Image (cartoon, rainbow, N blue to C red; front, side, top):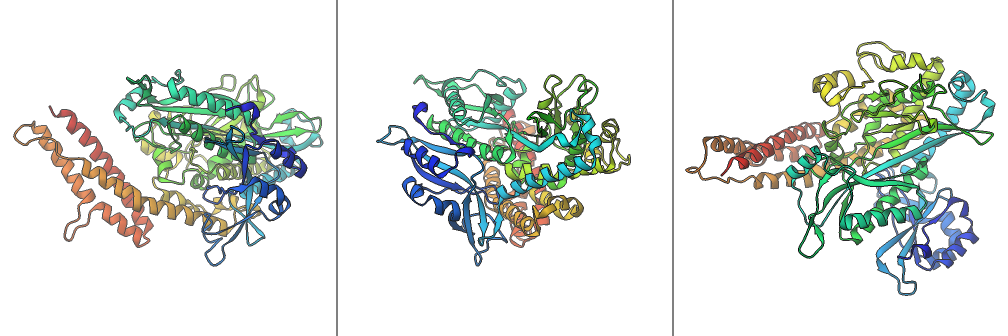
Length: 635
């Protein structure tokens, strides 16, 4: 690749017809154009429009976009089969990226063939904007307008920061960034869970030096991402993985490592667009080096999963051009946050039950959120042991990140998202939750010191905004400082299945209203999202998880001879066989657990299916652990 000759980005300020035509003609390696809409499920569209046709009909594409239909995108209850007209209309206000096929070099340019990907909005029946990008755009519009109104009505909050008067404010600026973790391996290699778990406990891979094709692919990825202008900050090994082996051929094989790449923050819509494109670049470059990449939240059971910690912040741009962080107090040594910051934190924590369905929306996502893997398991925050000595608690849901020397870096780190989370909806719902808390705090005109005490309240202590029966702050390691029962009591019982998570829409109707302000998510949109997520959960459980579980049951075979084994082996095998039969073998008058789950799904009894899925998970864990110990004891 000759990076100097390749086009990577057409920035928002260059979206004039003449400039676009001139740019594309200078870069004949860009052969196609694709309009990228993002549906309610987070899936993005892709099509190949020859670049010459795009140039010829550019005005038409900008005005009318590309037409698709409801069967091509996930918009249930919106784009039905009998009402399926959907158009993909380009967004001229964000950066456009060129997506390169690193496995196909064009003869005329000797460069990889490129496709200009243009982030776009989805329109249903010519008038209704639908999908994930418009939800985030509307959120930004509502948040910034409401924030300006609140600060004008309640200027006391400006005393926390370096703003003397509301008249100094030009605009509210919302920023976001994600940290992308992913597993890399050589194709067909199977995970040795015990080796991976041991290496993780010993921290043998964390921030270690990369080697071989992983190093090459990582370095190329960072160089290419930098060309896009993403502001790459670093790439490094994460906690998961084992050492690769150097084979007789002189090449590394048996590669199984976890990596992370971080880049600079941006405005919210650009942040989500950037993250979507970065995933494609990573996959394409690593695959070009013979490596598989997975962004699954929990690709290997019993080992660290892939997180995508999401950083969120609110700032003011003053009329003199300077920036002021609305979370960072003037006195960083003695204050954790401003009143605005405390309100934002309270909003996320109080309303998280209806944010969570947009973050952990799959079986895979919930599998990651288990104790012991630096993934959050309950609704709790940490501010630090003192304002003068910031600390990072990696066991909480949302943490305050602050640096006394750099107040502009003060932000929240939401630790529950994963690379498969829909970043557009993660950001939208998190900011709407924050706005609810900020509004409550500023209208009460409470000050930062009082709010710190309220956020740190005990279980069963009343509050003007937070719920009485809950606690919200802990500086402890919540995995070991509390039992499961205590965590559930103090911080709320987390959902164990997708059905339990999405059922929060019904359990918390008052909280759900914060997503409906200004019709950002109307009833039809929420119903569409619910149906999409439930259908995905039911289909995956029925057609993938249950068959895979049955394969696991069959793999747990008897490995001993009855006349040549220890008495413990006989006892262990009896337990294993009982579990195998209970899980997977139907009898006359008695159906197996897996069959009962399928029947419940077929009949639409999702609550029963959810309850049985939890039982299945318990039985499978017992089967796997018993079988591992059984095989270890055999001579």
